[in-house]
Length: 114
Length: 113
Image (cartoon, rainbow over all chains, first blue to last red; front, side, top):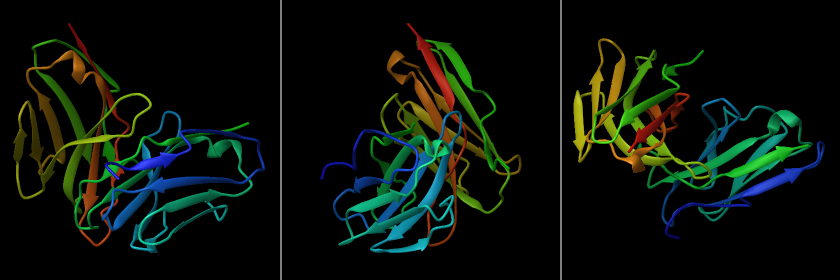
């Protein structure tokens, strides 16, 4: 596609429910990143994909968080048993290769856990 | 521990004047620095980057200066335009196979007509 697309744009969920956030990167981009921005915080790295593998998951805050990428394209970030502190804007970015520093971002998914 | 710091949460300038946004970092392993612009309800948009082997990079109205000895970089916008009003994030990346970005907290720039 023309840009990075994320869905849904907004998600309100009840505490304890599972949520899935989707990212469609720019076609042909092999590197994909998930970040999140909590209220009043800077962007925080979560996970990096090169192709379908995730060599760096160091930013995932707990084992309730997981992500996968299929076909070297679409990625899904799953949060199980959501907590209120999971409320944030989740941003996906892609770049042509991991050696290219400039990453292109989607519009984000605003997750609110009530 | 904040490795990338933007100490000014906000900045206000007059249209046509220069905007200077500052950023400090602590990690000497960073070898690339980037500036992103973010409008409300949108994702960050890449503006300009600089490699640690350079001290200046210019792209139109945007210039980034890097002072490695001081671990400081700045973004200059001249002349500033009302459409430049946004939050500006400084980000840094260390060499390696994973170009994840470490971000500052952002500076909200308001350009007044």
